[in-house]
Image (cartoon, rainbow, N blue to C red; front, side, top):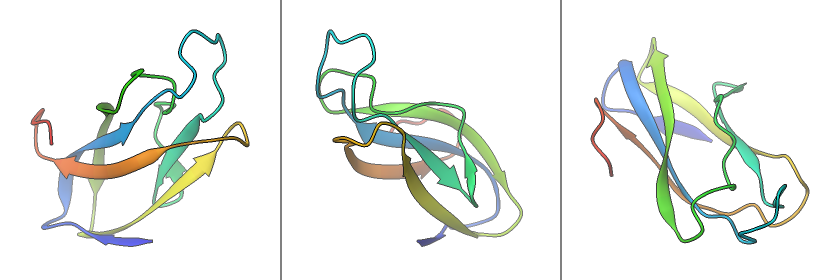
Length: 92
């Protein structure tokens, strides 16, 4: 999916997700977010136990249009309710 940002530059990525099976050592539903086909370091779907925004770290973009995709890591029940891009540490 192509995603238009207001401008190129440094952006913090936030992912709204949750762990569907808290208490399990390796929960199902884990996934990566890919920006321009490169996965963020953070694995999503392992926390929190209720819906919440998880900090995915910062990216640097050369253009204001990026591609965003999800990559399933466990084959079961990955949940992503939204992805947001902010400047600095501002939470969505």
